[in-house]
Image 1 (cartoon, rainbow, N blue to C red):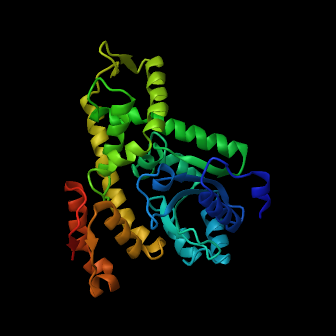
Image 2: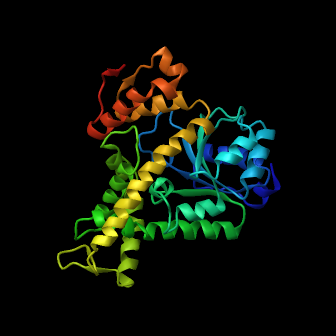
Image 3: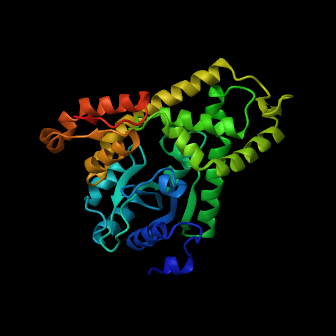
Length: 328
């Protein structure tokens, strides 16, 4: 066990499997890891199954140091120079973490430098990939110092307060914590291509309803105290000033560019994520209810032959609920 883990214990409020993955990542990271956060279906218990990965955000001090240490510890098979080249391009990147010492499935890790973490969750974020996930229920598993813990907490709080900026144009007034958070998740899910059905955002909301209502009830109360919102006579809140056309236009442009950046980012994930095709196939089947059968050509050359089927799955997920028929 590293001195870092002895000096800074893991959070006791998260599942033991997440703690095990975090120990291995911090140990293997050669002192470059500054924080590990847990998010996603395993934390929220939003219909995970035995194939569901553990979603972790790994915040690092230096990409180069982290990649070199993980490669030397045989915890990352991709060459460090390749990972160093890809990491700053449309951050974050996604990688599979499946150490041989563990039999608890796989961790799907978003890896970001601390500077990129602060930027992707800040008010000037260039796309919605990180923000859409981390305005939800997130638990900090470990931080390297009290200062890092404070910065992480303040960044997450700022991202939650910023929800009114980008979700505001899509809200029906008056609104409360329930309608705000349901719309927030619906907007986030439509901001990128996902192999999931229309029902998924509501399912995710229901799995963390108590947390969302508590946290965003506080966000709304703070916004009222700052004069951004005002109480509606019939209950709920309204914006103190109507949202103008220019702000609505800027938000639409933001989500359009975010969708483009997210789609391009998929090409990077194909390189950084080991065995991405079996994982994506299982996830698409789990989220859409479809049985997906791949041809030999699609399995061998997916980047050439899989596109027509991938587009059909994405279109199906946007338009339908679960089904049982195979997609061949």
